Image 1 (cartoon, rainbow, N blue to C red):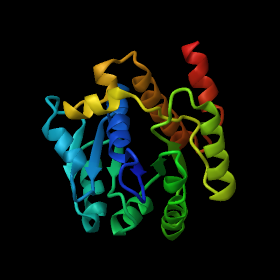
Image 2: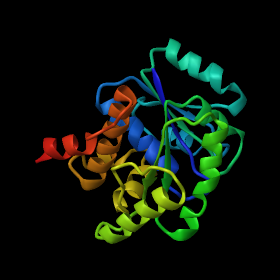
Image 3: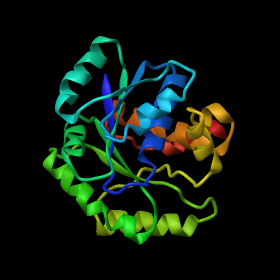
Image 4: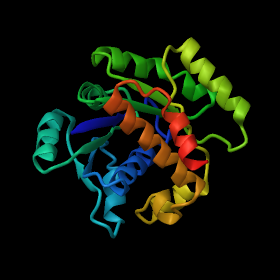
Length: 224
C-alpha cells in the first residue's frame, strides 16, 4: 500500500477536487483505493454522501488517529490511500506529510497563492522531507506562458519541484462535484478527465519507480 497526501496552506486551491479525482482515477485503473478525509469541513465525505457508487471508500478521521486509520485501510485491502487535509498549516497537514509516500500541493498560479508555498515547504521539512510536487491548478487552458512562469517561480524562488502535469480551469470539475462524481465520470474522454488520469499515472509511476523520469513523455506517446 502507498499513500498520497494532498496539502495546501490556503483554502480554495482545489485540493479536495484533486484528491477525489485521483482516487477515482486509481479505482478506474483497477486499484483498491480509499480516501481519508482529515478536513473538519468533511468536503470529501460530503461528496461521498452525494455519490451513488460505493467506490472509492471515503472515511472521515481525526489527525491523531491517522496511523490507526491507515493500518485499518491496509488490513481491508487498500492498495492506494489518498489523504485530504484542511487548507491550513496544522497537525493534520504535518501528520499527512509524515505518513505520505508522495505529497501533492495543488495551487493556483496567482502570486498570492504562490507566496503561501514556503509554509508548505516548512511542513515538508518538519515531516522529514517526503517526496513532493506542486500541482498547478485552475490554469487557463491557453495560458502556456503563465504556466511556464509559475513553474520557474515555484522551482527557483520557493525550491519546490512542479509536477509535469497541470490542471486547467474547466467547468467539469464543479459540475462533477455537485453530483458526487469526478470529471472522468462525466466525460471519460474529456480534457479534465485526461488531466486527472495523467496526474494519477505520473504519481503512481513516480512512487513505484522513485524517479518519475520521462513519465510525461510516455503519457504523451501513449495518446499520440
